[in-house]
Image (cartoon, rainbow over all chains, first blue to last red; front, side, top):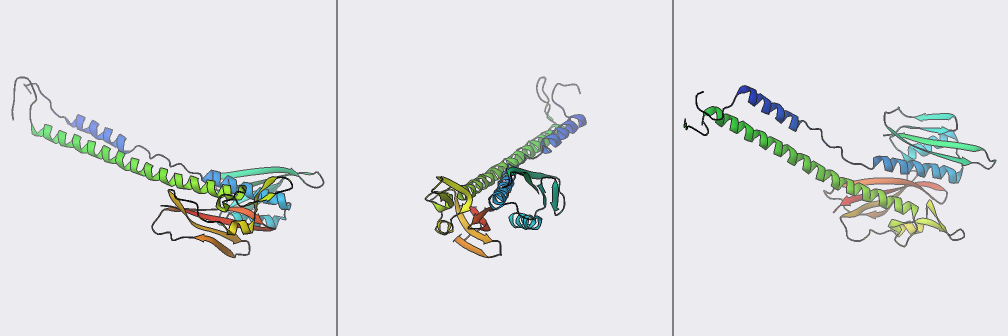
Length: 115
Length: 152
């Protein structure tokens, strides 16, 4: 070209297309959610229930868990004894409580719910 | 093609490039607009979720005149509220709270034997709603207090 001016080239077009692809492929922002807080609150409710009424049997604990968290899986641990409910998941929310029974024995109870 | 000594050279290439650039700008703007709409909708949903979580938490933890915001038992001897222990008669008197951005579509109690007791019920329509439940005691029985909140 002899005259001064603007001109386009294939390389320039390719660069602009790549830039466009970068802008459009920006990851979507994660929506905020209170699901973890809500699950934690329900776990605390369940632990409070057991503290008020006394630690129930294993079967009753499973029944309480399934009543409180229908359709969800999780684990209940009383001191060293672990009870699993349903399939294991990847993400979980857990809460635990330590209290002393009428004979001053230390009891540690934890509830874990898979999201 | 118009050519001057100093200035732009007009050509088909340039027109094509300009079209492509404007198309790109349009796609970028449309993408940002879609994402911002998504964010606004997400924030509205979060607001509704937040209100639902706080209302149902208040219901099981507090003892106030408005049963929807606090139906827990009050221990007169110890002068404290018994959280997660509800007064059944108090809860049955619950009514929806005043005007706002949301309304209570449903408040119900689910007993462990499967029975359900509905205290508040309203037509949902096409609104976005969120339903939560919390565990509590009424007397010696475990119950699930279920609350559904909808956008107005």
